[in-house]
Structure formats: C-alpha cells, structure tokens
Length: 290
Ligand SMILES: [Zn+2]
Image 1: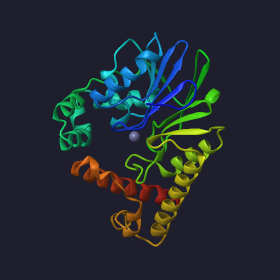
Image 2: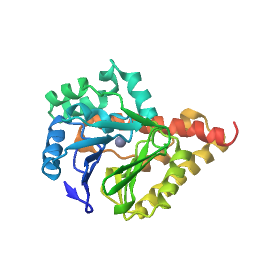
Image 3: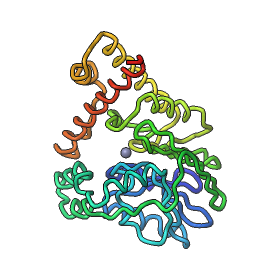
Image 4: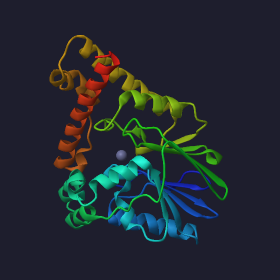
C-alpha cells in the first residue's frame, strides 16, 4: 500500500485493477476493490488501523469483472455507490457469473490458485445501493468526491476526483500500460473522456491499471487512440471490409498482454483486442455516415 497524499492510499500490485482508499474523519471510502479473496484480506488488514469507523462507502468505477467482483469479500456494513449502468449490467449476469468471469477464473487456475478461482467464480456481487447517471458529488469529512461517468472504455466507466488532494482515480478512463482493453469501448467517447481529464487540476492520476501517473501519460494515451482511430478510418475509406480491417497487421503494435498471467489470459486479451477493432470499424463507418 502506498500513501499517495495526506488522506489517499493506493495499491497497484493486486490482480487485477488498481484500488484506492480515502481515509476521512467519517470513515473510509474505497474506490474499487480487489478481486482475489487473499488480496482483499490483505487490503482490509492494511486499512483497518487507519480508521476506527471502518469502510463506509465503496465507489465502483465499472461493471467489468476486475473492478467490482470482490465486493463480497469485504467485511462491514458499507454503502455501494456506482453508475446506474453498473446496476443494470450486474443484473444481467445475476445467476450466470461463471461464464462472465471465465477469463479471470481460468487465469487463477493457470497461476495455481484453484481455490480462489472457485471463490471468484461464485462470488456474490450485490447491486449498488446508490446509483447516478452521469455525476454525483459526495462530501465526507474534509474531502469532496466528484464522481463522473465518462464512458469510453465501457459505457459505465467512471472517474473519482478528490480536489482537496489534487488526485483523480480515473478508473479505466486512464490505463497506464500497453494494450488498454478496447473490447467494450467507444473510442470517440474515450478520446473525449481523456481530453476532459486533461482539463482537471490534478497532480496524480491513479489509473485503472498500471502505475500512478500524470496528465502527460493521459495525453499520450489520447494521442494513441487518435492514431488508431485514424488508421481505422483510412482502412474504411479505402473500402476495407470488417474482417480485413480488424485483423490488419498494422494494429499489432498496439497489442500487449501480461504473459506472467499465463496462456488463458493472453488468449483472452487477443480476443478482446480483436473485438475492440471490430467495434472501432463500426464506429469509423458511422463517422463517415455509412
Ligand atoms: Zn479494468
């Protein structure tokens, strides 16, 4: 666990997404939570000495498995806050979690954690108690939480800005590692979301994945997406079909996957990357009014 600013703590070492915590005089606010039961315990043990009031709120930044699945492993009586879109998507998978989480449970099996795989496969994720469409402001003691659904990476993708500390928990609006997941993305929206982040007075950006960064890395990701979008638009205007365009070798330089997570993970990332390019093809066609 790293203490990033006076009241804010971050962990970037867990599988899968980064997690944050704000320690206020009214208790702890979590931003996302660890997926693996062992890492959830580790995180809660690290936070326990910091507040007698314990965990009061959890802000979920996405419905993707890597951001909300570990809720059932958190102790205590806390309120779960997330965009309405998270509520809707969680309802869709209720009773059928195994299929949705397969890439994650297969990865846990690959890295020799079959017990955790089973716990994650069947983990109960309650619906959020409080939902918002686009924006919610929360005041907790000395801190303000400006919560915005920006979309881009997924339709639910949400950021949490804490102005008093100059920190943005960006969720997957900012992913500070190569090969950001595009499988559920709208690239036009994502570029707009990154451009919006660039206007915020922040010193630290806590990305959904990868190391803590600054607006410089945010700008670089935006430029990368502008490049990918331009390449796809060129293929579309040259008359390329969806199959050819989404498998075009020129995109390979944008693919990356953490091979330490085993073969199932890498295979899943390839499929996600391909799906993202297919979505981008459709987006590029509609940009041309086709
Ligand atoms: Zn993520």
